[in-house]
Length: 261
Image (tube, rainbow, N blue to C red; front, side, top):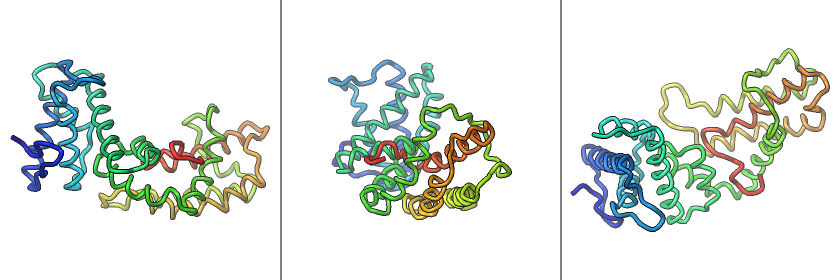
């Protein structure tokens, strides 16, 4: 049988062994979900939880990056029966929930797990590494300052109709605080982009260090600038800037899942 055979078994270490272990489990999981054999809350007769756990352990322990959705799609195309988009989504959600449980069993705080998996559930190994990093940072004073920085822009745009097509127009800035905040935003945005040629994803530490740049410009902005200006163009421009700032953690963390946000 293909390793690992159970939760306490060793995982394969060779490249070929890893490929076989992951492909075999994805094939079984996707096929069984498509056949209507997904587990229920009380029954898992085909051992899909064990299958998913074995695949995840193989990826995590070997630090292998894998795009779950792409891999599920590839497995679905090889099935002898049709696998609908809904069933592919069901398989993906099932694997993510197993990953969530593995992280919780390992002692990670639930709010940290939710924050990371909301943005990084496509790559189990990366998600685990991010959870571990965030767990060591999210209760620090430095991280609290970052939370405070993003909280107000996020709350300002929450529930408001801020068109995705609105682009920030620097020529509409009326106050120096707007210019300073936009410059800080661009600095953080650049820091959040992986370097050309690099396969490394942005770390929580990089995000925190870069985001400190926003703290003073944001404070000065809110002390001097009224976002909901009477002038339509000015208001839209400021809302677009708040939207862009609030979106900076995207792809890394969902800050709304964390306490005190």
